[in-house]
Length: 427
Image (spheres, helix red, strand yellow):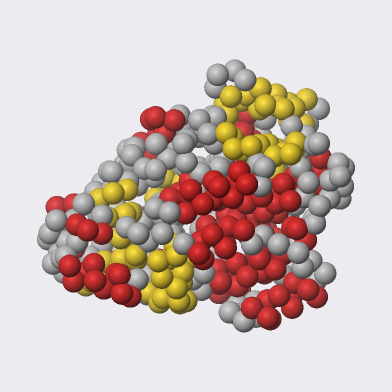
């Protein structure tokens, strides 16, 4: 059976593995740490704003499995917080195990502690990837979903030092760009001031370290907004964030907390001595990143140039998803890009024509539009998400944004693509 090898086990890698497996390929996931879903272990926000539309469209296309898990293990549904409506928050302490079980149940070979450091390339095709212990893993097609953060030196060079985040580069080794080991040149994102990269946009607090009143509000409402005194407001932080959909005055004038099992604080970092001056935060403890009083991980340092089949330009059998495939923000965006990358990787194994989602579908327009805009002058400063900023505005202008599931499914049905990711193309 033709084999698809997925490098990186974050949300995008898991989505790619599932879609490649359902298409009929033998699938192996190589993840360098001891956890799947990557930054999803500290994220937790789904279905806010246009992500609702994107999630339902992906489900109609056949990519339902990961959304079913985050829906099932949510802490709150249909909550609103500044600039965002009808969000679902999943419990970050419970979801990883469920995702791992799903992949294993499907017969996907999940290999943790498996860091890829090099590739063996011949005539424009990857023959094998090479692990740090020298083992070679062969395949007919490969999907890179290694993200765009790390290694540790990049967080020092472009940020405030290693943030000791969930990626844990000092323990498991830093990210290696598979596309660059093939001789391709990656793109790097920039902030508005011209500096490379962007800070991850949030941190986690131990919910039990907050006042009982704040805990009660989080448990009951899923969200708490606490006004900051004037001396602690910092609008400059908004420009540093990867998550420009949260770059609103409400996020600099207030502490915005979301209940994801822990208390998710919507700021890239917050000095602990200042945080503890705010009523209710006198005993606040930072859970992730451990250096969240000073900094956070730096992202957008390694984005591959690709076509709209999610294939890396320059290598015939390398596909990309998640932040590796564009300046994207969010779990939904990772799942949508990874699902197409994995499906097309399976198709490429048997020489079948590749699938390009049409632009009369939301995800198809998202992939084509963002890919085009990234290539323009200043495109390295843009961020693309269904939840806000420039693309959510485009969604509304084009009439894509809706929370009516029947309308979304009908759109996919009219494109003759309903359940396309469920269809076996191998064997």
